Amino acid sequence: MDDKLRAVIHQAFAGEAKAHLRLKVFAEKADQEGYPQLAKLFRVIAFSEELHGKRALRLLKEIRSTEENLAESFESETKVAGVAYSEFIKIAEEQGDRAASLYFSQSHDAEEIHAKLYKEAMDHVLEERQTTYYVCDVCGYVSDGILPEECPICGAKKDRFVTFE
Image (cartoon, rainbow, N blue to C red; front, side):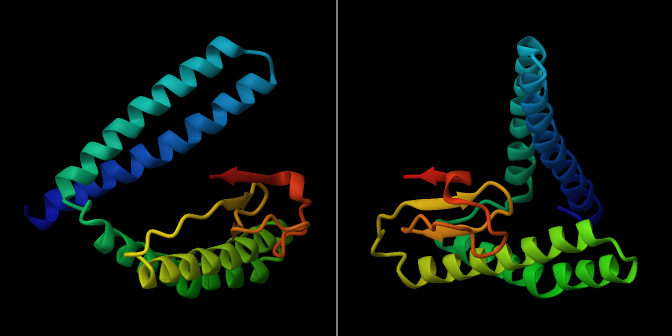
């Protein structure tokens, strides 16, 4: 595949991924506002966008072995936490946008935890250790095996954590 085609397929993937997430959030909002049929429509189209994104990833051959996917995820989280979010925080602070600065700072901290979890998984991939994860639905912090009383990043109480068993 040449670079130009790879670039447009990657662009299509990014668009599908963004649409998928945006529509899921729109579905939540429609449910909150009492529009269950519209919420369903948003979820259906989000699912369709997810399928498009998966097809793009397959075309790009970006789905590899689990070990390779784990290593790539670790590298990506490390880069995002160390480079991208640091720059985003700087820009938000320069512009005096406290909400954006808080969002970027908390996301940075959560991304560092994600990288740590990937690294631990890479070190123990053959063990297939079983654990329960707890995800703060405010900032995205992930706890491995322990439900914290309070999120160490944003201070949310333990009832704001989503459990993944």
